[in-house]
Image (cartoon, rainbow, N blue to C red; front, side):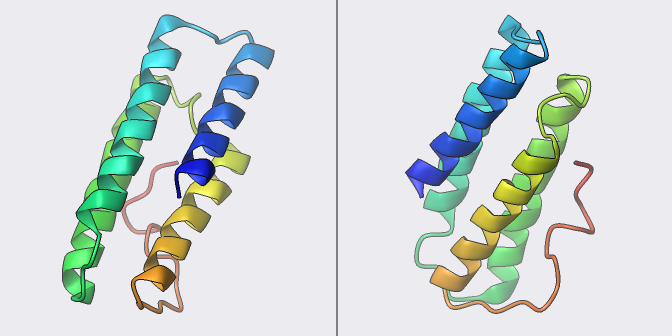
Length: 110
């Protein structure tokens, strides 16, 4: 889990540096992204109820929406979006939840 989150964070840093958006605000947003992701992982540890899991996913997605908005929608690009969704999907599968749809789509702005 942490390697995947770190990989996503590194992609964000690389992209922001390339795009010359490597600002303190972006760096703070990336730190918060890692924190929120680790919190999401911890909060879902051992969850057995699908509804409670979906509530945690929604809360996580809404936090990421705010981070992305605060960074003028520059933080989460296509590659990061796909990796974040894969992180959530992998977490779902690890917990025994099988969804045949994108569980982030309804709440996601990124």
